[in-house]
Amino acid sequence: MDLSLDEVESPIGVILLAVGGGAIHGLDFADYGSRLRGSLEARYGAVALHGAADPCGFSSRMRAYLGGDLAALSDVPVEPGGTGFQRRVWAEVRRIPPGATRAYGEVAASLGQPSASRAVGLANGRNPVCLIIPCHRVIGAGGELTGYAGGLERKRWLLAHEGACFLAPRSAAIVG
Image (tube, rainbow, N blue to C red; front, top):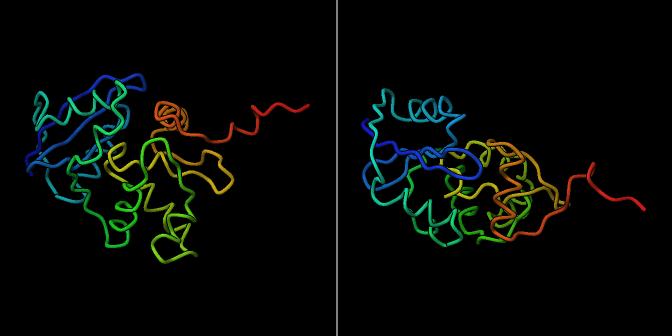
């Protein structure tokens, strides 16, 4: 498979976008470039990534999101692959608006499988198109930040950028 690859500078590191056929097939941070390539190769076999400036205008939309237009990514087409369950989870996660969060259990319940919060967490962790499928908006049941493939500092930054409310880490809590 031939895909276009672009890099977008951001306050949380360089973002890589792999684009083909008018959709984003992979999106990750440059320090996880091998994970991006591995995800693409697992889905497509051999992958050729060709440098391209702003393929389909998606890099510009990423820059707009980072600049404060929180709706800029809402209708960007994606092709994440995945199992039927993963695709259902990712579609549900994509419905979480900027500035809002949902617990893993809430996502599971909205899928009609209230006991599947762990499976939702696993699917969320395998999201190959982070930011556009906003897995950073899924948090722990008590409002705490839990797991993010790009690191919790990035998750914290993204949620703050979107104006989301979440609990501070326990170690940072003020006791009085």
